[in-house]
Amino acid sequence: MAAKERRLQIKAKCAEFGGGYAQLVEPINDMLLALDADISQETASQVLLNIELYAKGEKYLPDCHLDESNHFLDDGIKALKAGDLGNAALQLFGAGLNFASFAAKANGVKKVDAHPMLAARFKRLKEMKE
Image (cartoon, rainbow, N blue to C red; front, side, top):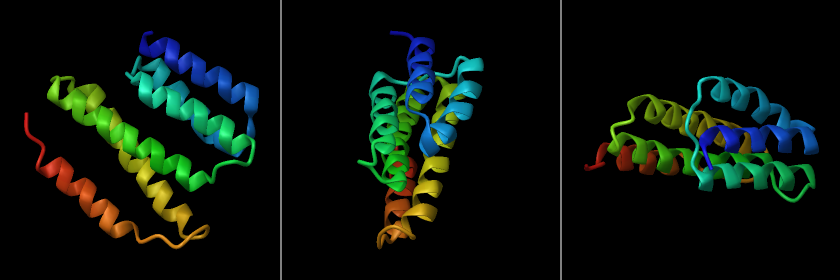
C-alpha cells in the first residue's frame, strides 16, 4: 500500500472516531497528504490504533504522542539511510513534535522524566551509522 492510501485511511479513521486526538491528527495528516509525504505501514497502523483507542478512552493522549514519536524516529532514520532527505526531515520533525507533545502533556497525567528519554533519542541520532 502506498503512503497516500495509508494517509487516506488515517483521514477516514479521524472522521469515523472524531474526538480530541483525531482533531490533532487530521489537519497535520492532510498537510502531509498534500505533500505526498511517506509514512510506513507500521507507523500508519499505530496512528490508526491510537485514534481508535483514544476515542474509546482506552489510551492517554501523551502515550499516543510517544508511540508516534518512536515510529517517526525509526522512519526518519530509515529514510536518512536510504538517502530520502525530504521524507527523513519530515519524519524527524514529526518525531520531535510528538515527543515535545508527549513531554508537555504527560506531566499532567503521570510522573515522567522526559529528559533521559530525550537524551537517548539525541544519542541514537548522533551515533547513527550508514
